[in-house]
Image 1 (tube, rainbow, N blue to C red):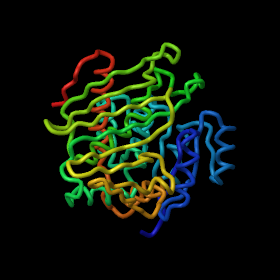
Image 2 (cartoon, rainbow, N blue to C red):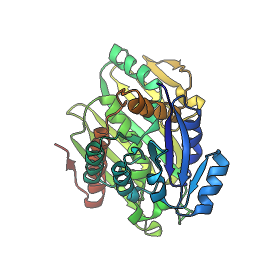
Image 3 (cartoon, rainbow, N blue to C red):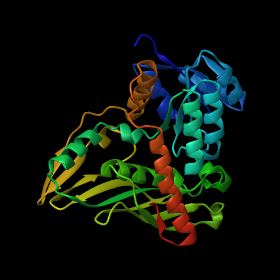
Length: 331
């Protein structure tokens, strides 16, 4: 690789606090510009993160020929439009999760990027955590036996902030979109297959524009294995994942958000506990490097863009089940 990928950021979202420094710390990229619909807001962000250029509109960043790729941390309902517009402008696209509001929108984004010959990736940083390779090795070795069940949980309590975009139905708010997507994504990765059905129950809060503030569900993978999960934005904080086998289990006490401790996990076999230690690497940086190498060195993305469409299919099924109180088949 002879040069760095030049990034533009569309939006001054809070997640930039994690993503922008991670890109700047990468070996493959630099952040060239940031855009907001409010120029002053963009300028403040540019000053904070030492970004050379600030724009007062999203359109301007797409016209900048000094930018190779854009990162889109906008509210969920804006993902499709700006990803497609970026692709049409010749920019590669790293878009925050969930990729879109449904699988149909996600497929439109994938198709538009393919037509424009640009890369598209969903920003699921937890999938870039190096410990996942070690976890898959342990499962493949047979140490915990055959997988019998999975359980994931991701909850937090921010319910008092009622102006938050998470609590705006027309912006793609709700706990399944915001945090339920994580255990669904991880379960699909662990199983290496697609679910066959979903059943869910949710609490839709009239205090929060009718979005799902808590959802519990069951995702069927086969006749033998299912994942149970719960996700919420009005509950005590936790982020856990368990892989239960016939001979043992694997526990992740910090399953999704990055921190040095989140590199580690626990293996329990026949009552004996073993702490697995993995050298921490910032998954946001690893995500940026993988995306950049796919563009600059023509290396494959760790996860193809179509994977985001498949994840959205499951999210669609979970939300349909919760709203209609039915089991939703995915086959």
